[in-house]
Image (cartoon, rainbow, N blue to C red; front, top):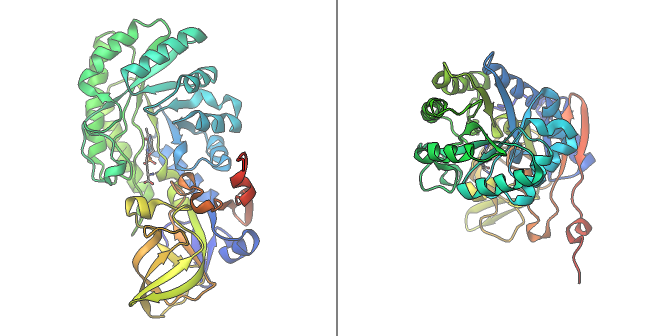
Length: 420
Ligand code: LLP
């Protein structure tokens, strides 16, 4: 059963929208990232609609998938952007020079140069994560004679049931400042001529499927907003961050899920006159992507069966890094064949290089194609050149059309700039 509507079987063959994946492999080779434009569009609209008439901007979190075609599509749909580096900001500005106005800049380690570039781009808001960063921002803004709108990223100390590497809302994490210290820091912001305390931001982690932590976080943020207002600040924005999870296994009723999420975020803010910002990444693009790969070899070592494919941990690191589950399906389906347990592994020289472990799969043959599903988020954006493997090519499917949106990296690309 495939959950993403962009990927479906027709006559036992896997398609992305109206294009068969076998045709894409023949034309562009493997490994190949394939994105369904329709899926991104539908998910963005469902997300946006869930917040209804509440004043809000959906600032897509660029880190999830930063290909210019993805950013362009979301920009045309009306998205703003959440960036965490000068590089991501440059990508947004490449899509549209004026898109900077709808950008929020997050991250614990912004450099003065990155801050200056963001000021020049006239971004909407800096999500500041420490007092030291605030000092650099004040200095840089004064030098540029431009007022920086600031939201302090507060840490609400909320437990989330997600992988420890992607949970961020606890005291011991490097993100944000303790919510208890916020009032004091906002008082200091007010003394800076080129800083404006415009908002409050929060982000509690990623791949969160229980809505209660979101509600808890917003309750604390709402309370702080009321305190700050009574302190005389004009808090115009509340940035709720990202983190809404997807179903990597089983059904995914996205419309229902995003509605529950919107409820959890909006209810605590009732009565506050703020513009809500949201920073979804995975929820918009995760299910819109698949990684297409070809079986190279099948081997058995001491009763264990390995399917060696041409995609590896450098192309998709989530299984190795977070023990993440991704469904792997044959591109040419067959009903009724018996299943065997296999590990699907890549060519990289690491035991951790697997895409799936102990997975029941139909009998596979060398040369056939597999699709690794739900890889539109944190797939290509986390890809590397480890083992000097070129990163995959990318295509964006729109109905019956395939747009080639990034070529496969060559050995020459990877050695560019090096000296022997
Ligand atoms: N806003 C901030 C401040 C963030 O740190 C993140 C993600 C997001 C928004 C977007 O979160 P999303 O809606 O995509 O959950 N590489 C990991 C995920 C790391 C997320 C980091 N921050 C993975 O593959 O699961």
